[in-house]
Image (cartoon, rainbow, N blue to C red; front, side, top):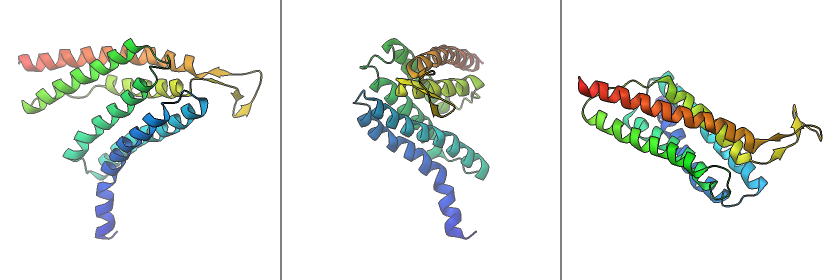
Length: 197
């Protein structure tokens, strides 16, 4: 592989992270409409962006190119994507505002504590709860963006079978909210334990 290709690959994870941020404005514009088609299009954008979240991390670890910029941009991109989607569907009564507030508050508090830990040279290992929180949030948002009834079974349209995607989204959002609070408390406890040493 020549030097130019290697150089391009080194920037690929950060490029994917930036692309996730760039998806947010068009997704927000699309979600100003409560229509089924708008929800479907927003779901496609959100799903692609969510996939890049896994892909950029995988590539960065695989190629050993975890950068300061990547560490800075990745959590920002994740939070922008999730919070933009949730906030935009509040006016359509697709999601309880208090749940969005809980999720947003947790992210602000933990991000602040991570900043303090970083400046103090404190290292607090990430727990699996954060990964589970992200997974359930993504599944919940996909359901909430789709929102409407979808009549299909194994990819075939059927009048005898339907899935209400809003109910699916709310179900997973409850789980995501519980894990969000749980992971937040877990991080707080571990933060103050380390701080007390």
